Image 1 (tube, one colour):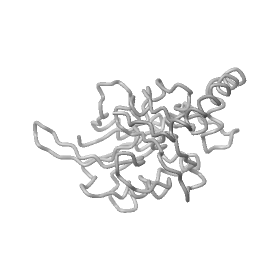
Image 2 (cartoon, helix red, strand yellow):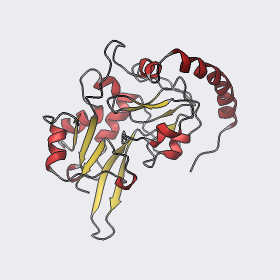
Image 3 (cartoon, one colour):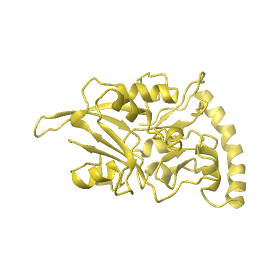
Image 4 (cartoon, rainbow, N blue to C red):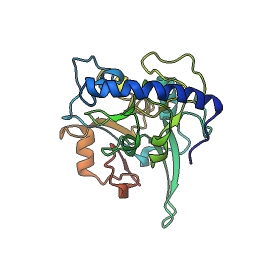
Length: 251
């Protein structure tokens, strides 16, 4: 369910909408679709474009993911400058979800980040183009043109997005955030573009759990591609045919 706009949200967003309505029209005629957004939001230098030859994905083995363990959540909060609060209006780029099989009674604890869908509903409903998918499959929000309308939050079946309600301080310079903008897991794009793994995966490995694998789904020699090919994996809400970049084992 969407949250009511606060008076300060309405004022800010009204001004921004008027500004963006003009600038979006100019941008749309000045550059090819996606070029401007790419330049704003990705961490690679402009001359090092991402490629559709790569599709970044994450595989989470729930049999190795313990109830009560929040190592991945803590690492995400530290890397991306999140406060770590868990209220309904707080930013949680990855959260632990407990699920139960109603037929067998089996319980699973699994991390739930943005699923980085091949066909992301959040992108489809965004009126300004702020929500977009890079060529390598990472779904991002360009905070410069996000108007905080929250259509994307309503469209996401995984409740993976949140709106920043308060002014922010002490941010990671590599992860700019701002009040009035919607945000979500980026696969730690600033790290991926340096050929590093997302902070959650690194923390899971460091703790010895090794429940998370990150890599190129399009590379048949990558660990994630080999595992997905060899073992049964599951997409959450596979019935929606979104072809998620995050897959699960053990559920």
